[in-house]
Length: 304
Ligand SMILES: C[S@@+](CC[C@H](N)C(=O)[O-])C[C@H]1O[C@@H](n2cnc3c(N)ncnc32)[C@H](O)[C@@H]1O
Image (tube, rainbow, N blue to C red; front, side):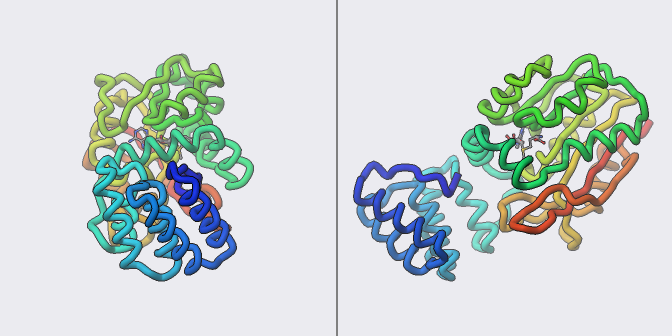
């Protein structure tokens, strides 16, 4: 979303900003930031411009100026659709929030929906749905599920893998446009807008709960795991991915503004909520800026 050009409403400011973008893409971050500052002199309350200015100042090595732009943006947009608070935290200028602002995640995926699949499958070699499906098949060979809940289902990339092995398939996501894309596939029995942190489907409502590449946008997983443990049938499976990091911290906010979780954290939270891993594998889950990104592919079950 940050790179999408959102008009300031002023022709000259827009021209300066689009030239600043060109300079930025060409690697002249200093000149880009300078020109973007000039654009914002004309339209000081332009929120998308402030976000972009912050990115340009940061890339030009002006960390303090970037923080000023993001703080101003937060004042103008307290719901934080641009994720300025996350930017401040990732740069060490604010505490890392437990969870990203809902408005940020929604805005990000609302904008991403039309190109999401093409970007992930064609360019980023995204493998999480396939890896989760294989892990579930290995954990429960030949099993047919009564009711599957695909949390953060997005455009429904998980759907084709689980539809043949279940009687009922529900998907839930924060982003309406992502849900619309999933609906176009015609393979989900039910799709609804919702937040995994507020999941309330009633006890024992699903015997397979999936979360493919969702927890990177959730941060602290305490509430999500509590809700999932409550919804999961006694003989049910919970299959999910996280981006993994090897440090001491349980979770960190990465420069990408996605959270990464340690294996120890995942194991502790599962145990705290009466679950245990059936399998836990470190896998390359997709490409990120030319490098393979490592994640954990986990299948868990209730401890009975
Ligand atoms: C990277 S996409 C993955 C989509 C899909 N699971 C897949 O594998 O293609 C992350 C999805 O999680 C959704 N999401 C993020 N935070 C969420 C939350 N708190 N509750 C529900 N959905 C969430 C986003 O809207 C987005 O569609």
